[in-house]
Image (tube, rainbow, N blue to C red; front, side, top):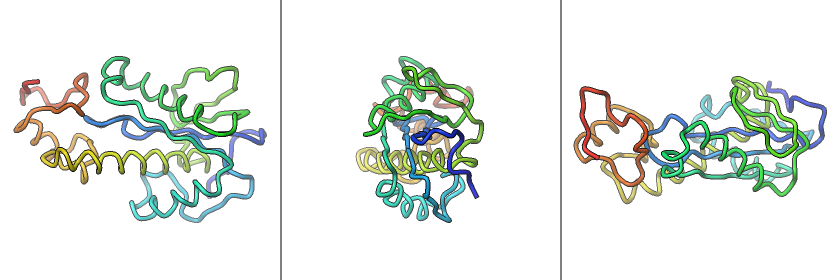
Length: 199
């Protein structure tokens, strides 16, 4: 069972992002403050959950959280400021989008930048240790998946409905055949060296 939170602060936010390793689309982050009595048997790191369980959890988290925020940083900005800075920016934006100001922030991973004067703690694999980070990971992943399914309709050749923009063989084959589109992150290595790409 995951711990509810890391600190003794009442309003502790957990934050996480989804889509960092993708070749296309935004990086999406979420921040969540859970009530002290929150528990759900399915809640875990979103990567460990089936799509069905993530979709089932999302409305429960949104209804029961004391506050939550979701934010997007799109590919143009990712190309401009790099994916690490874009991920941290998305987390900052998701914290700002919450209706409550947190007293403490815990972050999945090992990199973060100060958010105002609010203390924070980075936790490697935090989404498998703390419920508030796990809840943020579920929101970030489901919102991002929904967005990729939406843009898939305009660019079905890349099959983002299935691969969600990750560098699968299928996705890279489509880039090789059709080239990159406006949703691709041009600063990323879209193809291995042996597969040259005209952008």
